[in-house]
Length: 124
Image 1 (cartoon, rainbow, N blue to C red):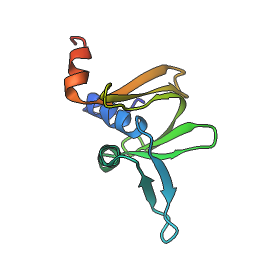
Image 2 (cartoon, helix red, strand yellow):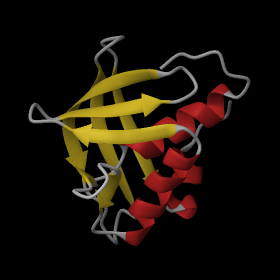
Image 3 (tube, rainbow, N blue to C red):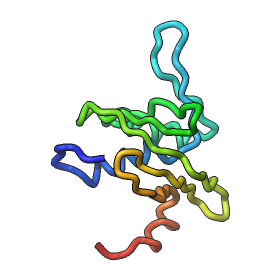
Image 4 (cartoon, one colour):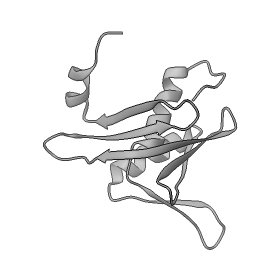
């Protein structure tokens, strides 16, 4: 996802939060607004944070594509969901493997406890 943005790392982080989850999006019957159904309150909070900052998870379609709207670029982005590695108490993280439909890149996106993620980061 490329956009004219002063903060590309923050935008990539918000993008990760909008993609890396097991949330189901539905439309409200009353007003058509987007409603998230989540099994975890943490997932719901993180996905709503991304939405608040302009990167909105829109749907997971019938072909297992994750559709995300970026308010900054005013574009929709599609990611083919290839696999989900669920959160467990032993791993303390979850990952998704997706293919960016625009760039054809395959990405592994992971989120989890800082005590687990930080030691796995490389310098730079």
